[in-house]
Every structure is written in structure tokens, then in C-alpha cells.
Length: 105
Image (cartoon, helix red, strand yellow):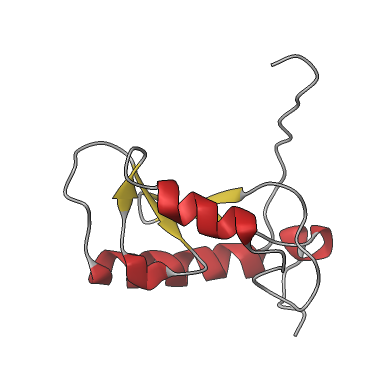
């Protein structure tokens, strides 16, 4: 779409570690069973892994969640994707947490 941009950033260790933990929990919780790329939510890894067609609930929950998953701050607009264990982990963070190497609790 005109006027929209996608920015690539180097994710900090805190985001990557959260993604790895979410991937392990989501894999243990199960899958929708459909072939293809799988997504999981760092906000609710117990929901398991979902294909792009089945992940609408995961995406909606994250978009409606105003806070950062790593601190008490407000999340930046949009959803961050971090790849871990062959999964795309979806999460929302604030700008400082996006690239930090340690959690800001």
C-alpha cells in the first residue's frame, strides 16, 4: 500500500530470548495441524502453534493488547515477528525493549 513502510531492525537479546521461550511452550501446547509456516503468540504460547489461516485470534489478541510484553510501558504500533525454532513468534514491545539486550522490569 502507498505510504506504508516496513522497517527491519536487529532484535535485542531480550526479545529473542522471549521468542525462544514462547516457541518451546507453543510447540509443547500443540498445533492446528495444517501444513506450512506456523505462528505462535509470545503473549499466549499455551494457545499452541497456528498456520496463517488459523492465527487470526492470536493476531487480534496482540493488536488489542496495549502494553509491552517485556515491561510496563506502552507497546509500539504493530506486531513484531521474531523467528525461533522454525516458528514465527508474534509479540508487541515498546521501542526501548525492541532492541535491548536485557529485560527492563
